[in-house]
Each structure stands twice: as C-alpha cells, then as structure tokens.
Image 1: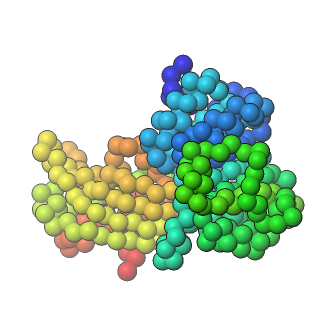
Image 2: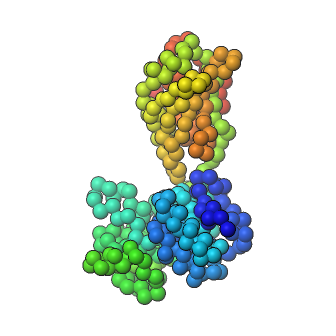
Image 3: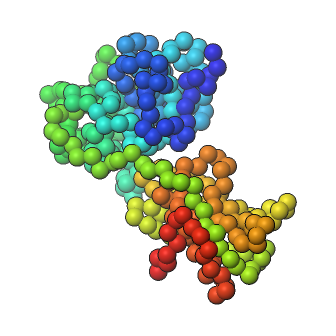
Length: 334
C-alpha cells in the first residue's frame, strides 16, 4: 500500500469530513492531538481495533513518520492529518462525532507572555465539548507543573467536563504507554500529570459552525495604470474584518506575461492560509483581481476579504480607476 493512504491534509479535506467514507466503515472515532513520534498513536490504533483513530499534527517529519509507522504495522484503522487541533475539530468533525480525545504533552509555552498560545483554554474546551459525545473521554498528559495547574483550572471552570478520578489529575498511569519523550522527562526529574476527564451531559451551544466555502472571488476593474506601475507602487496592506485579519505582504511580477502575484496572509478561525492573489490584464484591456490556485487555497470569507482589499487598493491608486464587476463586496472599510 502507498503511505498516502495514511496521510491526509486537513486543509484539503471535505468540511465536514465523512469519517465513515475515509475508513470505509462506521466505528467510534478517537483523536490524538499532537502525536509527535507517533508511538502512542500507533499503540492506540493497535490496541483499539474496534475504533477509527486519527492523529493530528503540524510537523511534516512527524506526519511522515506517523504514516510510515501505521503503514508498516498494517493498521488500516489509523490515519494522520496535517493541521491544528482547532482546524480538525472545528472544520472536519461534526458535533457529537468523537468518542475520545487524547492530548499528550502539549507545548506548555512557559513564559507568561506566551500563555495565550496554549492549546487548552476556555474556547478550546468549549469547541471540544461540542464535538465529543456525552460520556466521551478526554485524556491530557503534561510534565510541566505550571501548565498542569492551568489545565486543572480551565477544566474545573468548564461546565462541560467532569473528572473520572477523585482528583483533577494523577501522577502515575500504569495503563498507558510511556513514550520516548515521556521517559526523557522522567529521566530529567520531571513528574507526570495525567488528566482523565469526560464530557458530561450539560448541553453545549455550538458557536463553531462548519466554515463556509464561497465561490472563487474575482473583481474586474478598469485602470489607466500598467501592471508594471501597479507593481512598483505596491506597499504592504493590512485589513481586518469580523474575526478575520488579512495582510498583503509583497508583490511579484511575472517575466512571462507581466501579471502580478501578491502574497497574502489570512488568519480567520479556524484556518490560517498563505495564498497568492493575482492581478492580470485581459484581452479586453480591463484588469482582473482574483485568487491563484497554487497551494490549493480554500475560498473562505477571509480570502474574499483579501481579494476585495487588493482591488480597493488598486482602484485607489488613480482617480480614473473604477470597479466594473465583482462577486465580492469592495465597499470601502475606512
């Protein structure tokens, strides 16, 4: 079999994903977020043959390693997915679709100014509560005392979870596989903190709808300026919308046909994309501002805002410029 069977790209999958179709069977869905070396993930798939197991990771080397280990072990009930936990939970998983989530040794971001980057917070637990079935299990492991206190506080403050233990966590879990990373921490004198919680029956409102995919955005405009002049006058631009932040970073000109490729960074929940926007001249003489398909971008509301922002900037370069036709809103946001 090809390793590609086991390796999936979250940003390219259907929103939401039909996991029954992915695994070619209906089974309880288990997720490990941040599987690192994948030893725990592979063991989970091996010891839980009745379940479909997905591992979520950003690191490409970890993804390749995880896919190869699943392939070598012949574990067709396991998959690895490139993406963040937030993206996979929010965009790929429907409400009440998960039976179990495991988070092993998430980055503690120990400096206080970085605490906002920690995975586990009130919003993440709320998102998780909408995707876990009632009674679904949440296991978290850390060896950072400060982060353990943070996790305990947020779990205790959440209305959607209850501990399966008599305390927020325990320091030893003889039933779990000890990974190389975990053992390294023990060898360096760190202690383990193991949380075993579950989704209670408190209804959780769902402010995390499946992200919208819109039509491919484009704006047609007239401008007396040449593409070369537009490129020379480009300066970085920043635009904010509702829960969206767009940065137009740099413009590059094609030596072949003169069209401009503008690098754009788009951050919107739950997806961050770095895409190419195109400004090109048609045979009719007008200009088209749109989305380049390099990198398989998703045409989200944030992408539409980026195209509209670039079009507004181009029109603003010369008073003789004007919008001819558009499928996005290009009204000024001043």
